[in-house]
Image (cartoon, rainbow, N blue to C red; front, side):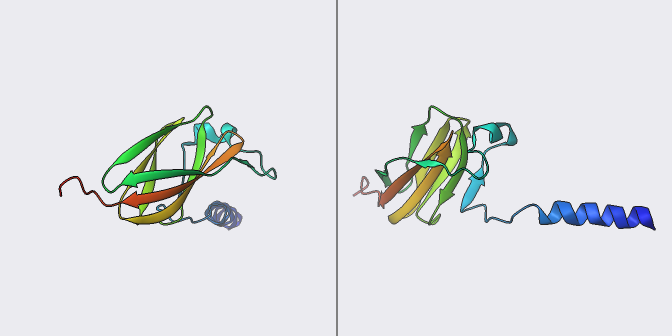
Length: 123
């Protein structure tokens, strides 16, 4: 009986320690990059916001000097961010509009103001 209680406690502890975040809004890079993330209790240093214009159906590669540890997209219906390597993130335009993408790398966080324009090349 005592072993069952311990096993249930361990399972509940593991389940409750994992925060549920919608995958479309925030993603983390594989665990090997955890050392690149800011130390707990210490906020990331915000860098200057940059504006990026994208076209629906097209992307742009961002490269960082430090390992990317986390990505957050305020409106994933407009654009998304895909971590393609430890230091590279691709931003993709999905629908016309505006959104903000934040990318944590090293001890910094880079905010991007994204404007996605329709693809008018066919017209």
